[in-house]
Length: 279
Image (cartoon, rainbow, N blue to C red):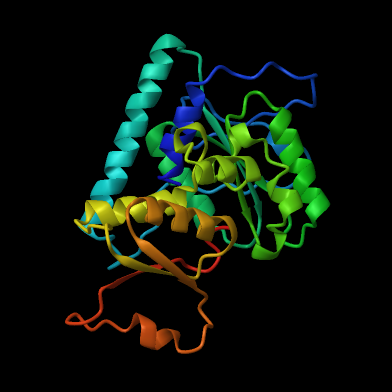
């Protein structure tokens, strides 16, 4: 989520698309302290269920994040606040909205997203579908968000099996903050990185390595656990930093021998992506 903020705010600088035909009212639910309003109403879902979580710290005892990671997150949030402040100086009534379509049981990410959005002043519309929702149900919600001019960005939190070409390319590229559509991926591969959205997970991997003092030039990078658009984006970004990349899945035979660290001999960096991080 923290990596999505600058991408979404960059999109807000662009002129808004022309308004489409009127549809059903859509009232986004805001993060609890992103505004002084109460945030009531049925929201985008109508009769569908919406989950409400209280903003607060999700870390348990003894689970403090490393100081370097905290510092980078704080920097991203502070930069996003500054961009948002400049935008709202020109248009005080402007409120950025990110929609998240969830069709999974992972409620932890919902809480993390809402907490970070609250800190940055970003409004969240969380659309909760049943985990067993089919392709057509997910696409139906995507198309409604595409037409809603009050929503500036859209992210998908769905099961791996639901990340089909049909679902991913139903997203309007201008709202695709995760960079999963063919349009955004194509621009990245062609070298038009400034004209497209790039996977925030991939950007975060690069940024964490660089801000930790790791030089990527000339390194061999083994990317473990990524697939689809995330794998392609990571390989593209690493290669542009002068790295040679390889990919592997968790169940690859003899993977353990490849990731064992022998400081005297092993000059391979390993970028491991937790299962379920992206399409």
